[in-house]
Length: 266
Image (tube, rainbow, N blue to C red):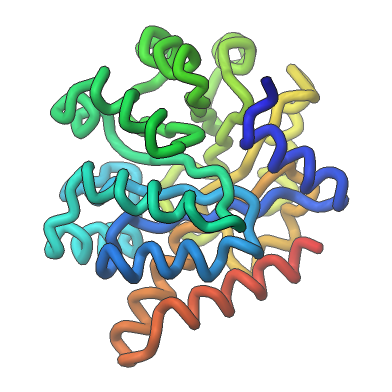
């Protein structure tokens, strides 16, 4: 059976555009606001990534860390994340949900319990930042048995041999980290160079959906629109922070930002 993630890419390709993926931290700045943001942007996006709030997010830049700390202050736990997903999936315009976080939180919750809960609440995919290939093989297979996509990460320094093996082992989507930095850093390399590296991955298996993440903003998104999908996270977290600091409604402002991002890739 074709996954909802694959169907999302299929729809975007049919419309001759990349899939738009957004990232927000679950529970930022409250459970209700987090859900309201997802519902407000749902019609404009193709896939939503929802991050675990974490007090030491190794791969995350300042904007996402700030979002994480706000959610942690509100004592957002794993069960709260599942509640947000469950409520979001009731929305008839809901999109595939990818949970993104760190393995130690899954381990603490209990691997079996976690995957069962993912299946029950309608989680479509997982990105586990600190569980690289080949260490993730066993867990990725457990995900596959539950029809949950385990999304492999690739970077500019991934060797050619390793690249081929990871692509071969990957499920319906691969995530290409555009540059070696934490999320939200300014693009230190040109979009052309990013695409050059990206096409090396696509050449291995052109049918495999591959998205580009890290450093994508309203300014840079249109230069990368030949990719299968583009992930915007830090720019959205930054907008939530700006809105809260200015005592504005983050739901309205994030919705406006996502509408602008969508326009740039059409």
